[in-house]
Length: 134
Image 1 (cartoon, rainbow, N blue to C red):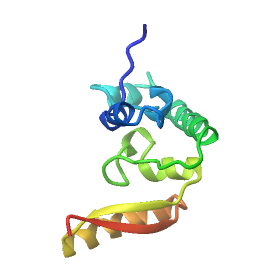
Image 2 (image 1 turned 135 degrees about the vertical axis):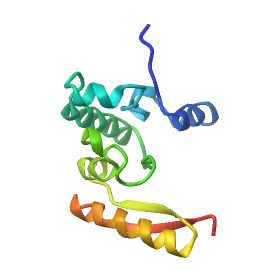
Image 3 (image 1 turned 120 degrees about the vertical axis):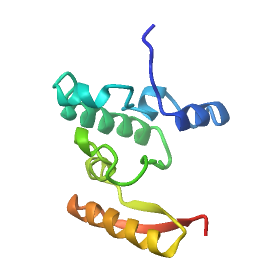
Image 4 (image 1 turned 90 degrees about the vertical axis):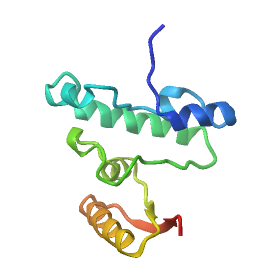
């Protein structure tokens, strides 16, 4: 069969709560294996296809679920180089965002300011903030 690369968090969820995760491919529609960025930049992989795969996977899960929590990765800008950062994903699937930020005063404010600006750029609403390690 086909080798499928998925996010480690999805694999953990699938083992702990198998009833919550249907198909691996839907729970982790885009993975960034080594050289993936180069493949996108060289045109071997199309950003539009990644976006459509993400939307389709979300819709599959959404239509089978009572509620959905969609986890981004890293900061809001992760994935920008391939045209699929966390703000773009939230905008594409029509989600508001609750952001997790580190607990220090300066770093929290700095990260929130930059990440909030990116969310605003894509028209995504910031609905809450969770301060981590306070």
